[in-house]
Image 1 (cartoon, rainbow, N blue to C red):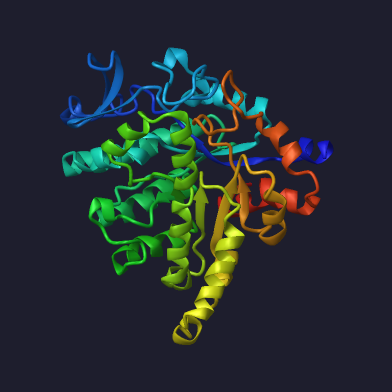
Image 2: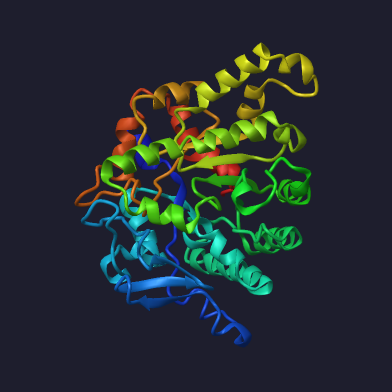
Length: 387
């Protein structure tokens, strides 16, 4: 369907921005000039590494795999070796043009996958680092606010500060919230607990989606280090299985009554595939009836009702099962590239991926044109309030 894809404004609902070296140091007030997160040379690793408090984290370009010449766990040792589209908005827009992407939703790296390090900072400093990141992302997106779509991070460990940041970041132009369902690793209650009521209420009032990204807030430094030491076959197994963690998250927001309590709140699962969504809906309904929940919970509809009304999945590499998912849940699926991460739809010397538009030409064969528009544009435009 060359004509449709050529004319369609394709929205990518999961891409990442590699934090530039001066993100925090250039914004830090004088009192935090020496404590703000920064890149420092690591003799042990022989490369620049992010330092947040006492934690030595990732390489400056560890997440910028697009176009890289080696398989994971190898990564570009510096920004000089990586695709500048990972951190330069002008080049990002050029790359989007090259790949046929009209708009991209923007996720973080450090503040998503190394949350534990930021929480260990002085309380005021920790909150400021999240605010500074949200400010940076708006600056990044200002290169083209119609094409670059920022999602806010939150200092979720301080509920009052998090609620205030929802309003502040939304006023700046952020279109959704990055959050998790299970906070047990960081000593906080799950998202359906009454603890989160003020935050979810404010998100619903501001019409901001809640976005669940694989690995957010749950990855410790030990987890990250172990991931960087495994072989390719282990990476394939771990990555594929980890995608199903979001299935648990979606089952929980539905079956605990969270969707029913916040009927206008959308929940988005990204970097987790979409092929499991129809199975999850069918399984939840069957077991809901089979184990008596349908009789015991008269206050709730069947789980599939809430999934269809409020839950969204995303796909990038899926092909064989995609037509079936699109047929069953055409209003609940969106497209992503995961640029510039290892699994992204970005061609390279060792990448199995085709460029997004080429991949979509094959993936959309046999899919009704109305559904294609929903998957590649309309659903995302509705969730993120795109013009």
